[in-house]
Length: 186
Image 1 (tube, rainbow, N blue to C red):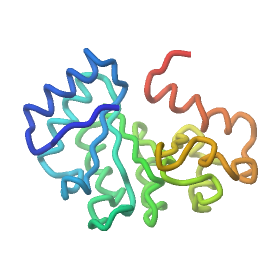
Image 2: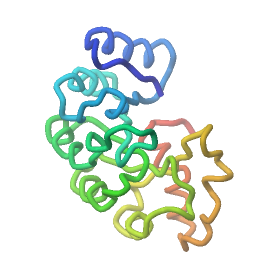
Image 3: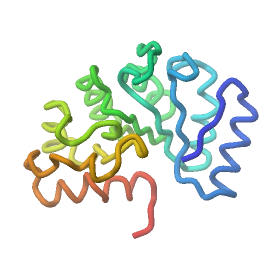
Image 4: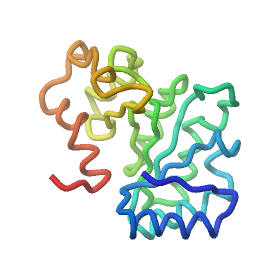
């Protein structure tokens, strides 16, 4: 994943093109809390447009921040307006959206191209709402993530078997959803 500075919109668009065309990146990731702006801020819109044009997902953090920074810009509900304004944009909200996990699930359920990833959480720490969603109508909407190097893949997987996922759901969660969303070769 590439990342860009949204405070310089034209530079950001050129960098997105470079990341995708020259470096072969499969997505662009921008963290709203670093910019101290909600995802609906006008400075994000050139990024969304470029992602749509380049056919790559936009990845972001939803939920509270780990660092001591305001969390409000991480509310998942902001992605509702973004998905309405950019219906072709594939959006992956990372970090489960906690403490607004139900809000994240509502937005992902409403919009065909909105997904949730579990980065920054180990399987044994997943909120019950995300586990329930993963087992039901969210089987194709939740992607496994680690937040490496802070959490290694092995650590992130601890407790996975205790979730009670069937084999197909586990395969979707651990691989097939990401392969589809990020257009990864088999």
